Amino acid sequence: MEISVTINGTTHTHDVEPRSLLVHYIRDVVGLTGTNIGCDTSSCGACTIHVNGESVKSCTMFAVQADGEDLLTIEGLADGDTLHPMQESFRQCHALQCGYCTPGMVMAAVSFLEENPDPSEREVRLGLEGNLCRCTGYHNIVKAVLHCAAGGEQ
Amino acid sequence: MIPAAFDYVRAGSAEEAIATLATHGDEAKLLAGGHSLIPLMRFRLARPAVVVDIGRLDDLSYIRGGGDHVAIGALTRHRDVEISDLVAARAGLLGEVTSHVGDPQVRHRGTLGGAVAHGDPASDIPSALIALGATLVAAGPQGSREISVDDFFSGFLETALADDEMLTEVRIPAADGARWGFEKFNRRAQDWAIVGVSAVARAGGDVGVGLVNMHSTPVRAAAVESALAGGASAAEAAELAAEGCEPTEDLNASVEYRQHLARVLTRRALEAAGL
Image 1: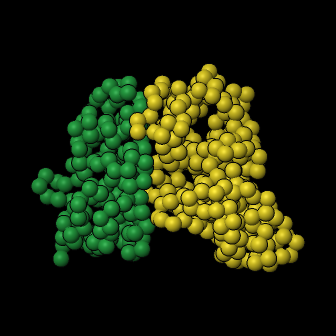
Image 2: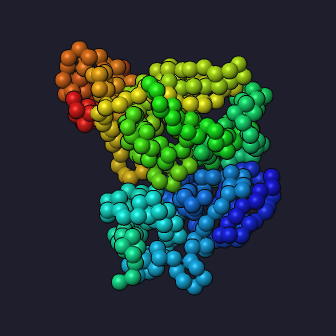
Image 3: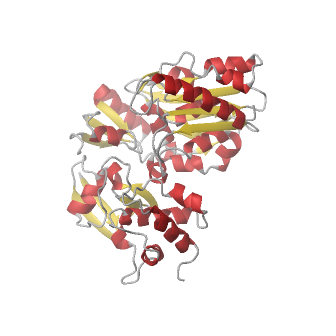
């Protein structure tokens, strides 16, 4: 089936099998490999992207469901060489260790702050419950989200 | 973990979806948000030959509540239920329970109707609908019919929906001024409940209690409700929470542990509901 999907402002048109998962389409067909595949079971959040502005696990959507939709992946977050404030906060707060969960964590955090711009620490932890960091580096991730909510910079 | 191949049909209307179901019978499955179906398909526990995508039927995404009930379209996403002021005011238990489903990403995609039609005893939302005494509206080739939530869940992942029927609306008798409690016991964030309890005490005094993961279906704690109606205290009534339930044993819990959890969590949920 032919689908047209806008990813990071560029429209892509491809013929896909209905059973193709969105994350495989993004990585293997479009070639944007910043979105990682972790658990493959809708648990870990490594594959989190935005669909029409909201965080979604792209391993739990068929590519055909994204036909005509507006997607944002980690590659589309920065403005040229200027990091998105959330990326900058992750950098400043050392909110990554191995980095595997980071793209999904950042995309989930950006969506979360759009819904809750002034969260408590507990709300940040609950807001990121769909994302696992197997380095268990949650402390600095939560710090980075709070830092970004407070306006970033130091 | 790639799903088996299937034919994909994107329905332009509920009528078209129902007609497709009528043609393919039990070979076809409806796809709404996909957060119950797609994981099953990836493990190949479900292998539908035809997937009918109803995810774009925006006319089935709504929350209305002017009269004696709140009506929620089957394709309303969890996130919309979670943040609805109308749900908070008139069916607050459902709003709170919905906020505990999965995680934010899941709630952005998953739908109320999808979660209910999946018929999973471990799902949180059916317990709220049982406690609130919801009615489910199903549409089929012959028109629509209403099904009481007490007649809806017929077996493990089985419901009263016929192969050619789709759930279109969930109706909840308005619970203005009610108090409620929801208790979900799990080991890690985002996990399914090992046991969960929804309880609502309506302003008129009626109490409804629904249980998560205590039976092969979502189930009503009928003995608790009748004990309360007969004047028992919350602590006394909660002792009857596991009565009539046949919970399963798994890696997380033995049967006895689930029964114990049901009693403790029911007492807590009733206390949170002001009893």
